[in-house]
Image (cartoon, rainbow, N blue to C red; front, side, top):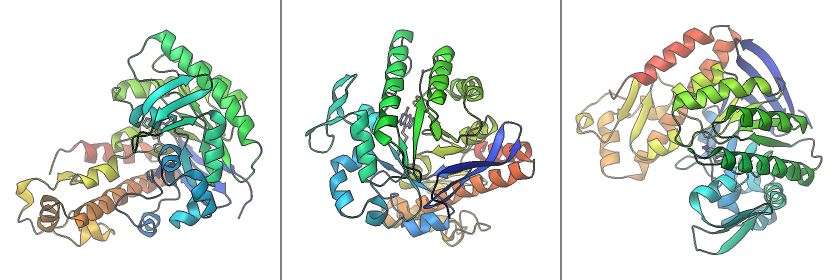
Amino acid sequence: MTDHFAFRLLATDGRARRGEITMPRGTIRTPAFMPVGTGGTVKAMYLDQVRELGADIILGNVYHLMLRPGAERVARLGGLHEFARWPHPILTDSGGFQVMSLAGLRKLDETGVVFKSHIDGSEHSLTPERSIEIQGLLDSDIQMQLDECIRLPAERAEIERAMEMSLRWAERCKVAFGDQPGKAMFGIVQGGDVVDLRLRSAEALAALDLKGYAIGGLAVGEPQAVMLSILHETLPAMPEAKPRYLMGVGTPDDIVESVRRGIDMFDCVMPTRAGRHGLAFTRRGKVNLKNARHAEDPRPLDETSSCPAARDYSRAYLHHLVRSDEQLGAMLLTWNNLAYYQSLMADLRDAIERGAFESRAGAIKDEWARGDI
Ligand SMILES: Nc1nc2c(CCc3ccccc3)c3nc[nH]c3cc2c(=O)[nH]1
């Protein structure tokens, strides 16, 4: 066990990295996929199942938890790990991104943001200091700086303004976070699709000597080629010895291409959201269980899988559950999809250790490219 946060590189294969983050609450094997647990729960899953699938860390959200049940209430109940019965590491987002995408934004200036709750219309504010305070109340292990994520396409001047304010907010978050050896505060690189702004953001954040860095402002609808070119240009300017977290990414193809360019950590709502909408990811391609062709198909999704949801239930039964909008449909398909994502990450970690990243990457990309089966 350790009382500090430490990242170690165990192997590399080209720019792809195999590493691990050790923290008091556990070790995070990278490349890592972090299931999104926005309101202190990974939707339609028991957290024991999430753990059994190989997840070392889950994500939480300042925005949702500050509105309901409230950060001070979670603190009074022992913090998020106690509240949700997840004793392993938790990373929390700072709330700015969710305010832009979910809330009614009332004001955004140097101080922070003022917004109306999407739940009951009540007015709230977030400053860099308050976001870090909330993440502390949640007892979060990896805390994200408050930042401003610009929607693309945008004018250079607008991207530059938001990037520079996010840098000033990173400094304020670092001061507010102080010195917490067993925890980490990550900076978030912004700069839109403008390479010189991306580099300025990466270099200024590196100078703050934070414990890890995220690449923000992507996975907001831009073409994959744009995302990958920004990674290719930005990652070399980021400290080798610190973990890199690409926020909101992505499909298996996105993940493979981002690992290839040097990303260590991922989050995406895709496997859980798709599961709730009847879409199953398998090693032989995607299966849309809403489709009538599955109505009498006795085969499971993947008889070779170790996940009961993939191995033990017929497509006919899954089709029935999805068509009847039964809770069990969302539960089984979410289980299957998270199992698929965690098995991809385990494959990639193993392939990098063996110096076989390229061949494994090609196989995963081909699997994903297959249409509906
Ligand atoms: N703070 C921040 N978050 C982002 C998220 C949410 C990731 C998240 C973290 C923790 C819980 C849920 C979601 C993005 N998702 C897609 N693209 C994203 C970009 C940003 C970004 O630029 N900044």
